[in-house]
Length: 482
Image (tube, rainbow, N blue to C red; front, side, top):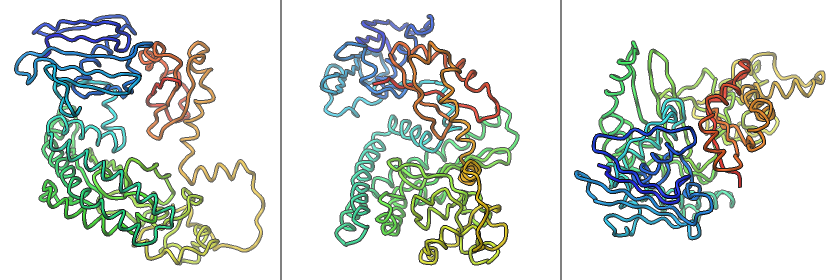
């Protein structure tokens, strides 16, 4: 139980001392005066970082050399005092428990248990697998030291294996020396990855019934299901929670995928790559990541809409990705052998016919599929010259085939930013990029403006989404301009 909270040079607080009554505390104040900063300081002692995703250097008060947060606790807490500090010059973070500095920061993780509720939590449903993985990791790391240790060791082995894979890719992915450098990290990845995957499966299985009950309580008429799938792991309901079974499955998957990974330069299997699906009211939402978080996301290619192929888990498979096409062709209409071999459908196969590479890669397809139906319609490829098309029409067609039309329309808010938010805000902000989940990243001139704009976000989103003809901006992410 928190009794007293002290913060020095934290955010907008030069010196803060708050006594917390036993029956609770309500914080009231004007916008931009530090209510959220106070809660963030308390939560920092649980996560050892900002729950808003800010860097440690960014929570130091402007012009100060360091910040320090300290809490006094009462039973049933395991410690009497918990404190964390960070120095700007040395970039070092230190944590103490009852006045004793901890040799490892993880020893102080969760010393002050707390739960934060934020509008950003909706990303657990609307966001991608990375948001749900992060939630699982935080929940399990705070409640299980063994999980935290396994996760750290798995990530360390993954980092080194990916470095070896990138080196092998630069050299053409050939040679026993490169394969030995990659395979040496696989036992550690399988061992610790098995613990991580089993713990995640167990958590999801334990909470699946509660998830169904909550959905029913808010009015869902049909059953809702929550599932977790590890790429390359053991996903059988009975053995998925067994760390040894997961280890064996990951060992087999890593060995099997090694030749492909040597060619692509990245790890494709393991608990970092996952598929999570939720079924509710007869609708299926499936999101799949086949590569780890260190790799850039692949483009949405036309093959995702092909009716010929769907894996048992319901996730779609991209044939352009499977046959390792050059990046020049990614996102362009692709084709499978099932469509390519039909003379009337050869229009969709121009990338392969032009480069004469498709038959060579045919064994890698495993029955996977072709492009969208419109791509496979029409007469056979003709050698006659065609009427030239306007560049704008060609570009529009390419964007449509690549599934980028909505993204381009959505990104039009960037050049229109000054007119949408007004000259005062435009003078201190600069829209940087639009992420795939509909988040607009905006650079801000000062900390004070960043805090103020956080509270103005609902009004700004309403202004940005005034034009209903384009997909809406779902979220604004503020970053300090350097």
